[in-house]
Each structure stands twice: as C-alpha cells, then as structure tokens.
Length: 472
Ligand code: NAD
Image 1 (cartoon, rainbow, N blue to C red):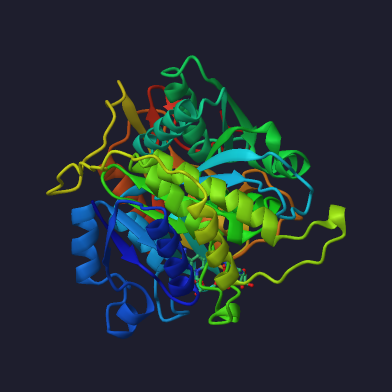
Image 2: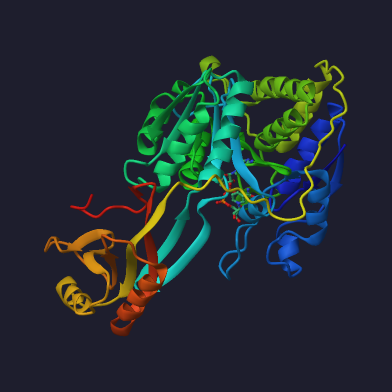
C-alpha cells in the first residue's frame, strides 16, 4: 500500500529519514510517494505551500505522513498545517500522551496514557477577522452542532477502542453559553450512544490546573479547537516536551499524521533533532492502517532506547547528549532484537468525493425573529449614542447598548471605559420580518458608520443570543 510522505522543512528531513529507516528495518509493508510541500512550494509561488502533486497524491492515497513545515511570517500567509487540515476535512486532532521510563518530566508524572482529541476545523481557526473600527478588531468564533457531534462521536469511538471507562469534555460554557454550550450539549447527546462509557465535563481552566497536579486523573479528553491547541501543548510539557508529542489529524477520508513540534530552526543540521514525536505519529498511522504488530514492536524498541538514552539520576549516571544518529542506530539495533509477526497487507477505502458533503441536522420546530444587534462606530459617550438611536423611530425598540460586551445603557457604570464601537440591541415583542430589520439597519446607518449586524432569533422558544444584564 502507498502513502504520501512530505518530509517538511527545518529538522523535517532529519527526523523523517530516521523514522523511515526505522520503518524499513521493522519491515513495515508500505510504499512512500514523496511529494514537495512547505517552504520550497511557497518559494515556487504557491502561497498555500501545498502543490498540485501533493494534492493529487494525498487524495489518491488517503494518508499524508508529514514533517513540520515553516509558515512564512507576515505577508498574509496562512499556516500550511491549518490549510492542510481544512483542505482535507481532518476534523479531529488526536494526541496520545505517554510517559517513557527515563524521560524526565517536570512534575515527575509516571504511567500516563492520556488521549486528547481537539476539534480541528472550527472555533476561531477560520480566522474570520475584521477591523470593526481603527481601534477594534473582531474574530468570529464558529461552533456548529454537526461539527461538534462529529468530533465527539470520533472521541467516544477512540475511547471504546482504547478500553477507556471515561470521556471528559472540556469547555468554557459558564461564560460562552451558546458556543461552548452547544459543544457541551452535543457531547452529552452523543454520549447517550455510548452508555458503557462514563461522560463528564470540566471547565477548561480547572482542567489546566488538574492536569498539572495529576494528569493520570483523566483517560480521554475532548476540547474545542483553541482551548485544545493550548491545553494539548501543556500536556506535551508534562510528558517531557514537544519531542514526545505525536498527533493524528483524522478526516472521513483523508488522515494526516505529524509531530506536534515545528521546524526547530535553532537545531537544524546539528544532529540534535529527536525523532520520537514523528516516530510515535508514525506508529499511530500504522495502527490506523491495521499494522498493529509493527506499531507495537517499534514502540517496544523505542521504550528500550529512550531508557538507555536518558539520564538515570537515581544511579548518578551522567546525561548523554541526545544525538539523532545515535538514537537511530540504537533503534535499528533494538528492532533487530524484537520479533515482528506478519500483519495482513493494509488496505484503505477512501469514500469518493465530488463535492462538499452537507451536514445539516433536522430543523427546529420553530424559529422566530426578535430583532437585531447593530454594531456601530462612534466616539461619543453612551448617553449621546442612546439619544441619537432613540430619535430614529421605527418599528423596533432600542433595548440595550453595550461597549466591549459590557452594558452601558439603560443601566451602566460610570467606571466603564468605552471604545469607539457600540452594540445597539433593537427588539420587538411581536413578530418582525427580515425586511423590517434591514430597514432599521438603514435608519441607524443614516446617523452612524455601521460595523456589522447580528439577527436575534428565538429557536424553539429559547433566545438564540446572549441576554444582556437584566434581560430574560
Ligand atoms: P518548534 O517546535 O520548531 O521549536 C520550539 C523549541 O523546541 C525549539 O527550541 C526547538 O529546538 C525544540 N524542538 C522542537 N522539536 C524538537 C525535536 N524534535 N527535537 C529536539 N528539539 C525540538 O517551534 P517554533 O520555533 O515556534 O516554530 C518554528 C517553525 O515551525 C515556525 O515556522 C512555525 O510556523 C513552524 N511550526 C510548524 C508546525 C507543523 O508543521 N506542524 C508546528 C509548529 C510550528
């Protein structure tokens, strides 16, 4: 079976060569279609860093095994890694964190085997950002029911395969009641399909502290994208650093396996790059392809080699400097000593795709328009903005004004510092049409520079927008 390999930039070629040599020694029955991706593709004029040949190859093999890639700074370049995940619909990022005997950990944690799944597409990672005024930048955060259900279902499947008894959902639904609230609601909906697994949740800041105190408390954790990005690197630190953090980006058809670390420009060509993270990403890939025996044998060899290569403070032994070449030699020797039974030749069915799949859940029984939040630019104080908005007339009533998310009218505090960006909420008790809302926007636009608008909808009787102080 063929997979696509892109060695990447910086230390990418060093660690990829080491890993493929180890795979070769272990008799991994895969062929590698090598494609250019990353810096050289960007320099050749393709701003995505993913050339046509890589696209074609990945879409035919279904597997991309990649080294780290450099995203050029500034100039509007998007991260190649984020682009690849989105391009190929890799909706879940799975990271397995294990401690290895001999690898020093800052908190002395031992026997950790923690799986974290991060939603990989949504949240603020669409990078839908706008300057609302010259002083105010905004980023839109998308959390969707189909996207959340997809990542939660994958997480429970992973937990079931791992034999885990518990899955924990991390979130910030105490503050972001609609976005994180939807992520959490979808989690408990999906959990009903897995009654044999205990489902619980934790607020993400509490999770951060508890992971540092005792990460072995958790078995499988699922998180939204941004929170997951941060917390998973924290756990990488707990198991000894980025050199021990592998990852798999899982899609319905295409999966990408890569180390969490970057191109490590400070150690390129110095024989200092540790291939462990890429090797562990590789064994995740072998398991994904059903090459379980090869994965287990390589990991057994890795455990032995890491034990030899790291300091033994308990025995007062000196710390040998990590050398990529020494690591690779020792891995090749250790694999020689491990028996690897034959695996069946792997096969991968990639569901054919001719156009994007629509993921829409059944519609609610009733949705009703209630009004609109209008975002406008003004350097005037709240009272003056209120006076002008009240003078507009119209079908909808001004019910609230806020600034930076803090209510400033009709109630407010004289200690609130304001910027030149207001949200004015217009509502009505009775039904209101989209046409009337657009008319209201037009009226506000006569007096103020408009920055944006959000429709206020009631969905099956519940407000589909955050309530202001004193509302509800
Ligand atoms: P980095 O992960 O490259 O390096 C951080 C530190 O960790 C450095 O001191 C480095 O020497 C060390 N390190 C990382 N991997 C190591 C390994 N395998 N062995 C030994 N030491 C290792 O992060 P950075 O410096 O912030 O980013 C450098 C470049 O990598 C940037 O261009 C960034 O865009 C890119 N990047 C790519 C990926 C990816 O391709 N998945 C991920 C992160 C960063």
